[in-house]
Figure 1 (cartoon, rainbow, N blue to C red):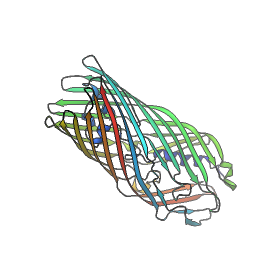
Figure 2 (spheres, one colour):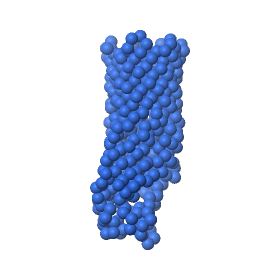
Figure 3 (cartoon, one colour):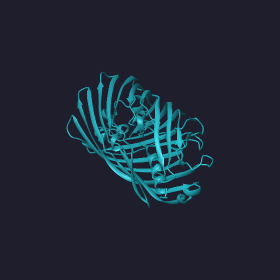
Figure 4 (cartoon, rainbow, N blue to C red):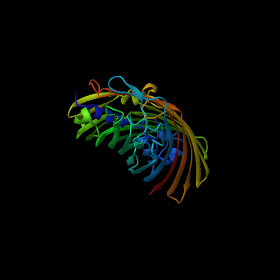
Length: 427
């Protein structure tokens, strides 16, 4: 019989695409001010809080520091609707286990930070820290989805060094270099050859630094500001360990602890935004983002036993948002917005690790001036997830006498909330 370790490592690798708090595994909470208007005008706004969306945003701003923190509260449920497992010999039975999993998507906290400074009359430099892909999901060991997902943790830190230039009275340009650190720990249950035996477990852990870039521009025309930016895809290669334990009988030879790696690519992001300062009090914002999720077409897994390509087949998506800022007086600004964000996950390949669906985000926020140089930002949002379906087949120990097939079928329901607070200070 061919050793099963490689197949075990491959399934662990697929969990790198687990659910976050925006479509796919992207975390868009990178600005408290931006959340308050549903991320509708960030490419066309200015200051440190807009650096993630457009490096040209700091070309005309004073020296500024921004810090924000976002609490993400997710209420989700997955339900078994007829999942089965087929053992060697062709015997098919229900997958069993708990038929419902509550809150598989864990709550979390996402911080961000940025600091900028002008250099002379035409140039500016900035440094920002963000967590663009950051999540934790967890299913119980006896959950119906265990053969697709148990526990997943992915943390990233994106360090962005930015240079911007005021080219003319109406045009600003900016460019950034991005260094992104990723750290993951992911586990999956593996079936033994009899339903009377407890499951085995595979676990993949790894980390690594990888690099990308961002470029952007802003055009100012009277009461209008237009912004455009492009953030490159980043090819991640996580080096770490693959641990397999709990397999019995003929499969016991696959229990081991060896080096392994998994490579995947985050999407490129193209952003277009506009901001219209209608009068001294009212500003209207609009933004469209195109996500190159087709970059995440496969996961390349490597172990001492060789390599394999795991198809993911994500689809490119386009999100859109509209928002408003209203200055009540010199000390208080209110804002609100709405965003539509479709999922990139294919309907016929959606896994329990990515119980993703299209979503609407409704947001409101405010900025209070605490002093001549300090502003307090607060925001809250409600995320309405469309119901979706899990449809995922897995072949374990493929091509051997032990071949076992699971067919997971389930329903997903969910909603979420975001509470954010931040400070901006000029000096």
